[in-house]
Image 1: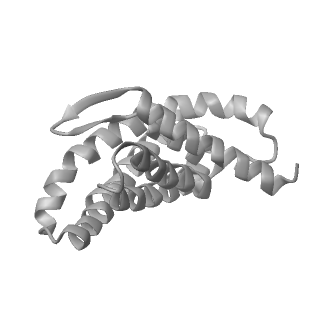
Image 2: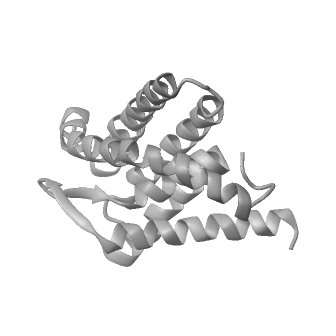
Image 3: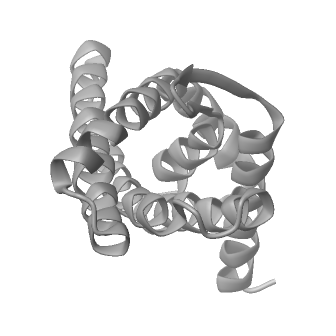
Length: 178
């Protein structure tokens, strides 16, 4: 297989993994939001395969998940927010993975997770919903705070797994990792 076909298939597997993880366990946290395990797949792809793969897994994973579960309700803003989160985290992980100090790497990665998720969920997702549903921005941001908190928790919990899986993925996907 050529490298581009292998890369496309690998991203397709990530999207499928996002959907399966999002469907397999839904732990309710706030009002109508739950911890989405799909963020684990997105984080691994951001860390190991780079920003565009992570953005594709997060954005297209949400689209497919929403189409399977509840149609388009909530999907456009969530998908666009995940694109932003995927690109930002992929770029950050590309830089921080080479830092030898584990505590410094953890702090920078955690800060990137918080900032990227704030921009993706509290700004991009909220603004998209303002445009689509004609609700005030303050209302949308207030409703999305729970999603922001749950997503940050899932992404932070995923970081140690990203580091461990990266070692195994290097063996199975030579040339595809960033």
